[in-house]
Image 1 (tube, rainbow, N blue to C red):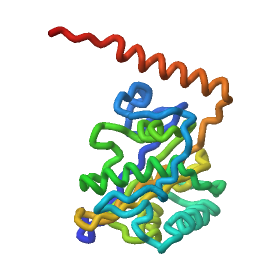
Image 2 (spheres, rainbow, N blue to C red):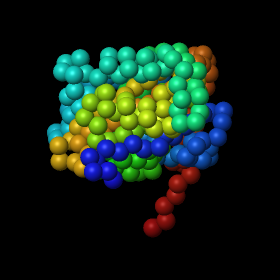
Image 3 (tube, one colour):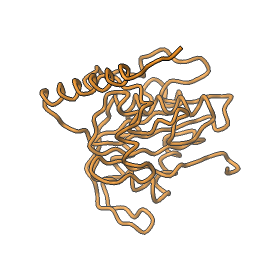
Length: 233
C-alpha cells in the first residue's frame, strides 16, 4: 500500500478464442456463481437507479450532473488516437471506443462490491470473475478486458495511473475492443474512498435464431441442474 493510498491492479484479459491471463478457460465456461440473466434482457442505466446508502452514484459524484462519461471517453479516445509505448511494448493507434450501458452496469456492480468490502480485486467475494459479471448483465462478448483502481479522486488521476502502468496501458490501447463502461463508487468510511472499474469489450454479434438456441440451452442446463438434486431424510 502506498502512502497516498492509491492502488492499481494488474489487468485481466479475456478472450473467447484465446487463453486467459489470470483465470483459467474452464472457469469461464463452468462458473456457477454468476447469477446470470437473460441474454436478451433490456439494458439498465444504473445512473438512474436509487443510490445505496453510504455509497455514491456510478460517478463518485464527480463532474456534477454530467458525471464522468464524457471526460472518460474523451481522454481514452485521445490516448488511443496515437501510437503508444506501454512499457517495452509498442501499440499502434486504435479506433475509438463507444460507451455501453451493460459494461457500465457490470463495472458499477463490481465497484460497489469493492467499496462495500474494502476489496480491490478482479475476483468478487463469491468468486465471480469478469466473465461472470458480464454474463450477469447480459453482455455477450467476443473479447473483454478489465482495469480496476482505487484511491484516485478524479478521472485525470485514474487515467494517468492506468497510462503509466504497462499492463493497464495495454488495455487502454487494445485494438480488439470497441465498447467501454467505467464506474467509480465513493465510500467515505472505506480505506481508499474511490473505487474504479473499467470494462472494455467487443460484443459477439449473433442472429436471433442463435440467440434463442442459446437461451433454450441455458434453460435446459438450469432444469437439469435442479432436477438432478435429491434429498435423504
